[in-house]
Image 1 (cartoon, rainbow, N blue to C red):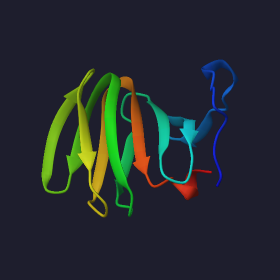
Image 2 (image 1 turned 120 degrees about the vertical axis):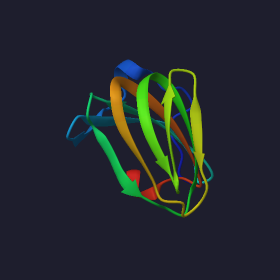
Image 3 (image 1 turned 180 degrees about the vertical axis):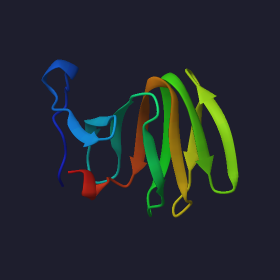
Image 4 (image 1 turned 90 degrees about the vertical axis):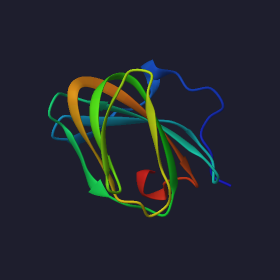
Length: 111
């Protein structure tokens, strides 16, 4: 089984630049779960996509317009959203912020 270290310190974790005002840090994982921090600049877009993973997202800071299937809503600090497997979803950053994404199973494509 692949897995991250047991203790992860923000200051020593690598940021992965995704371009267009987005970057992410992998905050921990094994085969069954993954926690990812994604930083958004104003106007940055997490493009419409779907994947076979369950995803639960917490808004650590900022304001975002989230499209989740046929619904579009505004979420802000303290809010969240859930995207079940294969549901198309996207995010538009309205106010700079950070999303915390939990995935099951691990997003192999992120490693």
